[in-house]
Image (cartoon, rainbow, N blue to C red):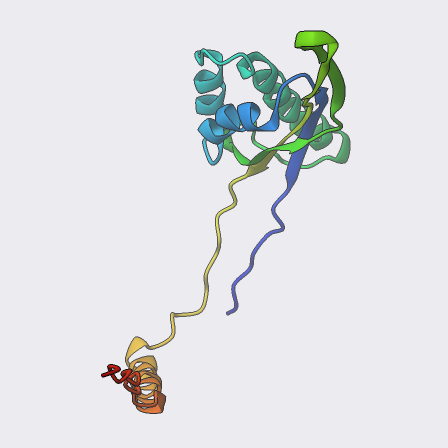
Length: 166
């Protein structure tokens, strides 16, 4: 029997043009990557970062997208079995601004915007019917390839030393 792997269903939500730099948004998003949805919501809810409420809103939207799509398409998606697959903050357009400077001059600076994307997916169990390959058969091949690598290296040449001028 061969392995049967179901296609992993992903559900995503975006919040575009958020008034923060992507670097600051990534600090919050890195906290929830790979976590189960319930644990990710708790983590974001109790975070003190300014972007935490926006990330929580996007995460809740992704969960709602999963439940909506599962109802519409007749899929069997267990919301309790979802986890945060990806959470990224891409850079949006920059707003160019001018700050007054001494002696009538002006300094330019940029206000950064971020696009926040959160993807949730359902953990799917893999059904295996075939026994694993014999590990002892693969071991001699690995030893031979390691021996070839060491034998193929040329001997290191000594660097020529400069003669001292007399």
